[in-house]
Length: 469
Image (cartoon, rainbow, N blue to C red):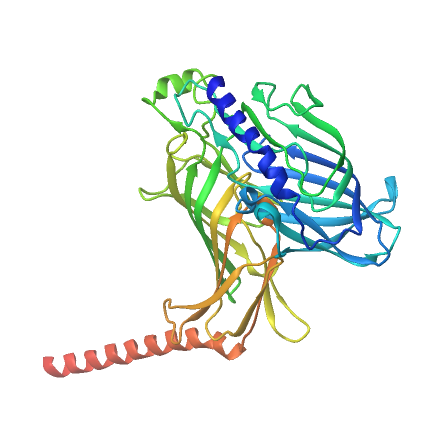
């Protein structure tokens, strides 16, 4: 294993001169900005990688600058789930954070396929001024299991690829990178002096006076037995009923995305040696639901699954579920979760008279990546002019759904997003207009049906009596 790792590391390091040569080509990024100090902290304790980047930038030019650019290698762009930035205001106890807008940006002559995101400043940075920016970006599917197959009694080892030097379009006077692993079991790591290791933390740097687009590949090989829970597809249907209920139905296609299981599964060994057998598998999942949940159920294709526990209080609801079998690497499970909510807690009226649903986006399962999430908001029949407000880019379109006693069908607002992480669990709104007259449509239809049946029954009795005479 170590020999294979060494070969891969040597191959990557042999590309360093070529990468450096390509990286030093010109780009259109302004040279009026330099980074005085950069600190990057990479959290590898889960299969969802969180990177916290602190940049102290300085305008060394003569004109104000309105945008700061972040650079990412092409290998990370496809795995980027979220990029957020904020400017720090004040110092120490009085420090506060001012959110900044972040958008992907295309720049000509990007060296070596580098991808950029622009951070728009609220106030342009004048000449000679400094500003501290806090950046959070999240990577999914960025840990590579090695070996790719393990037995029930083996621990899970993974690779992580990155650069010891922060990729940036600006000169960096001083920088440091910290990597935090789940445990102290570290198989190997690339050394770029100075490199230090203390417990579960690796420190690269400090490095000084690095030119723009410098790059130094590293590989870290370590143990990570945390559940690699990935929802391949999640469809959440939120059905609004103006009679006082909000019905939620969630269809899950779940898999364990870690090292594939090989050999025969022994349930006896799994239950008798829980700390040794199947340490990277998982058999429990926790779903965080809104407060006020009622009529919750959990089932799969076979039927209802009784191994679930619902805990509620005035502030939150937690549903702990257990699939029919523990999930090892490569194993999959499909199931459905459903529950009801009081409508008055989620449906409101805007000042312009429109109604709007305020609900939470994202996947309710804790520490889970959703490769594809589809949210379908089913509006009451007769609703018009629907529109959705989501705090991040999503794909939107409309559908029509027919249910019992529907005449023209119900409008469905469909929101789709890929690569969804827990940080996407933020409120979104769906606005629509509704005429109260439609509230009487179903009762009148039911009354008409019952009246028709009654008349039919009376006529039948009359005919029957006539025949008897």
